[in-house]
Image 1 (cartoon, helix red, strand yellow):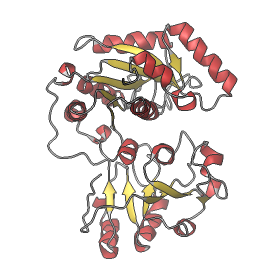
Image 2 (image 1 turned 90 degrees about the vertical axis):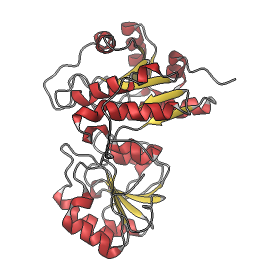
Image 3 (image 1 turned 90 degrees about the horizontal axis):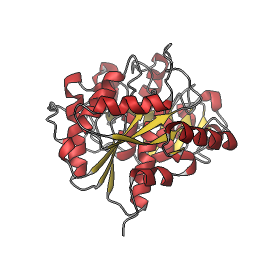
Image 4 (image 1 turned 30 degrees about the vertical axis):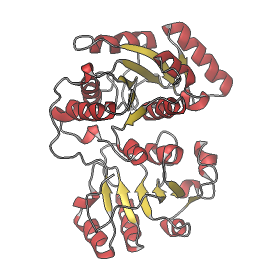
Length: 356
């Protein structure tokens, strides 16, 4: 990761406190939850006064005994090097109540890392405070300069490019992509993860947040990352964004599809959500969603939905397994919750056999 404000050193990302005030839950704090679950850094504390006294394991089921505290002052006792903004609210602005926390963190000598659409490094007060205290501000959602228009290079790659797509936002596309990547690596395969959003960038240490990219260059950004990953990986797992059914974010999804030109798709679905979140849009049957995604790709390149990744975190295990079986009956495709039960069945469906 690179920073947007330089103080003669790289930003610190070994020991972090996550700011998720009032929102540290699976669906409401995607960035914080993703870092706790998959981050290569150590999360030393989560700030959320509504869950203070509990642990990450208590609230989100992962993270073990990472403490949840009520304030930055309490978090400082655990020795963080950086404060990470742990939510990505709709519109991407910094909640006004958090401004004081960010300023206090800089005064305490911490770096501040953000995935908001609002760039902290462009805020005069915050930027000045960082400079005065020798702190770093990192805006990982800022796209790099000079992104290209897609040239149609990805369909000709030898790598097995797999894109996760979803029936809605927040359906598990990033988590599924990471589980598949890590599972492929455990099988001894040459695999890489292509982060396309702020949380994935925090976790993997590289990538481009395509939802902050000028629309003409979304496909080009995806193509550039896939081509780069394919130079050293036989399996390239691309983190999906948005949904073709989402009235607000479908353009980002289409740009990723055309830019990455996946040879296979993994369709992600939250079975307890009948409508697109925040809209009066009914999610169609999965068999229909499979046909639709394959048809969208067909004019430019052939692809197939190889399997269904279900997000069953809110269901008891017996109900989750019943939904998985029902999905397989409905679609005729392998289905599983790879976060809950492991990625092996979905990797087998993709043809990602063990090396050797």
